[in-house]
Image (cartoon, rainbow, N blue to C red; front, side, top):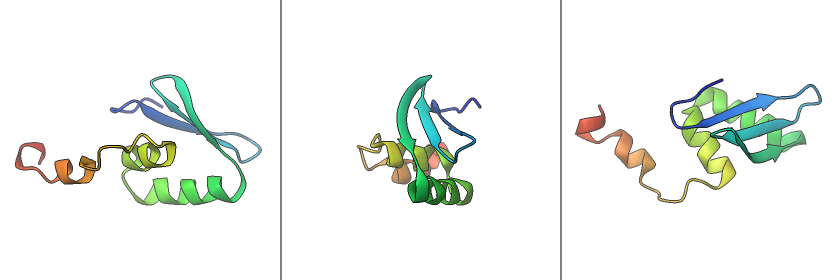
Length: 72
């Protein structure tokens, strides 16, 4: 599944979730962490959730930028 910011995820048959960024593996979640991730990604902005879970949420201004007048 293509995403505008490059993050995507795939759930495997054993419950493992693999998060990729621009085609490269960015993280693998298993067990309760995978379940928590799937719940969170369904209820919020998937790109921001994946960025935070992979550690690519490094600048802290992503949420503020969403509310900037030019991005509305």
